[in-house]
Image 1 (cartoon, rainbow, N blue to C red):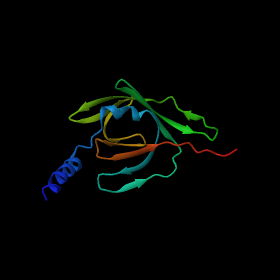
Image 2: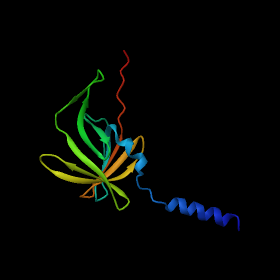
Image 3: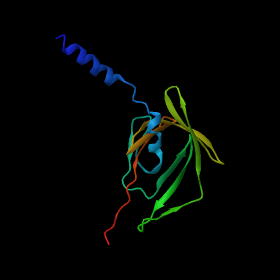
Image 4: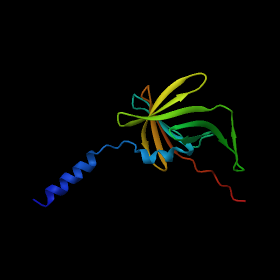
Length: 140
């Protein structure tokens, strides 16, 4: 019993540890992302299959931008000139993305981030989950 107790305490400590995003993982935001699901405050979920548009995120030294892109079958992307600039900052053990466009300003809390997925929650409590975009490859 004396040998099991320390093991259980360590296991309990790991399971209760904070799952917040680490600063060293922020570089994972860079790249092409597609939305996989949206979870609404009432608990309902909208899942997405194939998306006609994806997001391209660029980040450098706490500042970045997001652009909507439309992948083409030849491997290129169509894009508009619209850009959503943002700054990322740490507040109370969480990272906040503060967006600014000519039309609006808003914030999203970065909830989860790794090399293949991330999720953010906006001020209305809607959570957006993204997965790394993988282009469709058509054999020639």
